[in-house]
Amino acid sequence: MLLSLLLLLATPRTLPAAQCTKLLTAARAMVGADIEYEPAYVKIPYPNGDVAANSGVCADVVVRSFRAVGIDLQRLVHEDMERHFRAYPAKWGLKAPDANIDHRRVPNLMKFFERRGKSLPLDGDFRACDVVAWDLGGGVTHIGVVTGKGTVVHHIGGHPAEEDVLHAWTIIGHFAE
Image 1 (cartoon, rainbow, N blue to C red):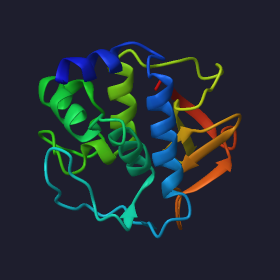
Image 2: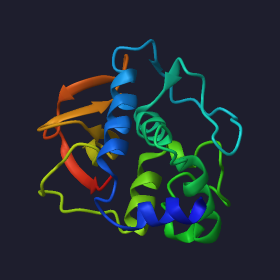
Image 3: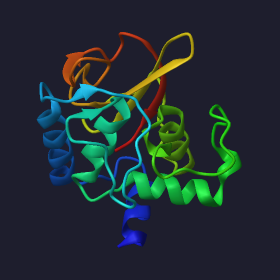
């Protein structure tokens, strides 16, 4: 099972249509749901851990969407960080990986997708199920799941939304499903 997940993540644009549909369904199920924006550090189970269903941040939209197709980014990011900790951003002063939070940080997700060969051109063809990351200014990052031409499910505050915001901010990451 682990090998099949790693192979799925190793080759760009390999997510079968049925899995992409399932991922999009999971992302869209969060739209308008009672999920308050809550960035607080929380201890969560590992693997397959999650913060409370009624809370989360932009990264949780991505993590929960991928989990719907059997890809546990919490576990995969944590395991990669255990093996290659220095390859990841050192923004938080950590001395070791932390399975409670690492997968919930946009720069870590970006680095994980990049390390798995999932990076695509920033000005390329954005397709449904791609992941996009932005710089909102002042070093604040954001991430979401592309659902169509210009539309993205993301969580920037309030509740998750599906909006035409693909080019609303500076794109700093584009990753294949």
